[in-house]
Length: 369
Image: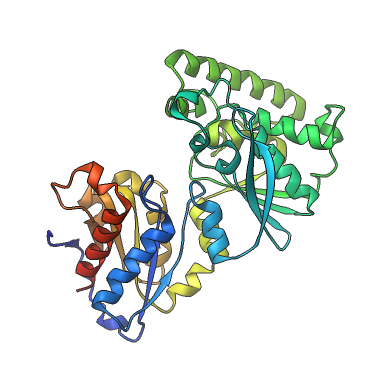
């Protein structure tokens, strides 16, 4: 293995603090956050058997959002049957923790629920997400935290709004819904795009959901018309607020119709698990993601962890299945930036979970030496 690229950070000044925190995002299509963390712990203990490793499952609001909350915070699973993006019935769940509901929109409206040939953002609907929200409100939840990520939809949340109306206002009048008056919504997203235009939901995100260039133009125009009608109805317009373009415009629907507050997904999770308190007794943090480059510094999960750790002078090691812009990442403050895969390893092999786990564990062991 190549020698790790590091900013040399002696750990002797933290020798009384033996805790090593591992908080690695999922390697999409390969390892979950839990699996990556477990492999990292094995790598740490192989070199430092006396270390106390604290695993922190993480997600920025997309894949693994519910699992991260459930593992770290707990909560009761609430299962129910809702409609998938093509209005087919599926059984899914969300979490209830005290008076809070934690919802991952990908569980009802996610791209992974569709086969590649089924992807069509002109048809895909967020109706199932609205069913999850409606059920949470009926269960008495007054704080609803929603992870926006991995959606198959570009419907501006129209399907979600329709589902809520169907539950609470059979007459079709949104203004008659009283059940939402005392419910606070927080959406977790690191997307800052507006709803419409060249930087909007359709142009930036719809192609990965199956949209052709012609569909992109149609979706953008549909979003613009919907926002204009909504602005006239409410007397205000939130289509240009950061996060409005998240999840195919679902962010806009939450902001405009539900008065939601948009927050960084990783900050929400780290606050919920009291991550800053864990850092107080930590000698080191190991974080990572499938592919790391300069975009990692644009609000992605490892950078959020780095920002928290820097406030307490805790060094952070970054590992990934692919590394670009290594020096840029080191300059940002990561104490080490290392690819887990040997240079000539074929991608098809690197993506096998057992090989990825072994390479991750081996890399961590080398970093700990």
